[in-house]
Length: 159
Image (cartoon, rainbow, N blue to C red; front, side, top):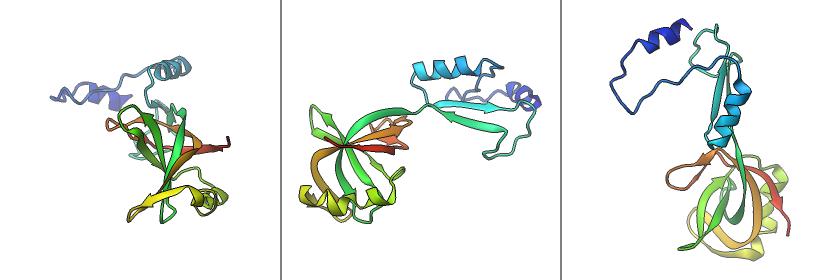
């Protein structure tokens, strides 16, 4: 709280940098508002904790994750992830990210088995496939460029 008091007395001199409001208690209502506004999340802190400059048990980041269905449209040759896309009126399908989190060892074999007959073309890094397989993903939000932030595989959807 002393640190917050000191920070509140500083003029940051830049309209692009702001101070995060402090809300004591009622964290559940605060998080619900964050979800309604489709914002990223909140940080819950022990108000008497020391600043450690890293994640700790006294400062918890609580993410508001979103979920959605995406088409599997390719994979990385080095098996580091799956390419995912969404329908786009102008482009047909538009790549929105690479999923590398949440993939178990069996799912890592998907390109070698399921995707092989769907292959269309490749470049130095990726193999592109026909968009027949859908995936359910969890993600934080979209970057300005329309790319998913922190996508994580929940499941492969079987049609």
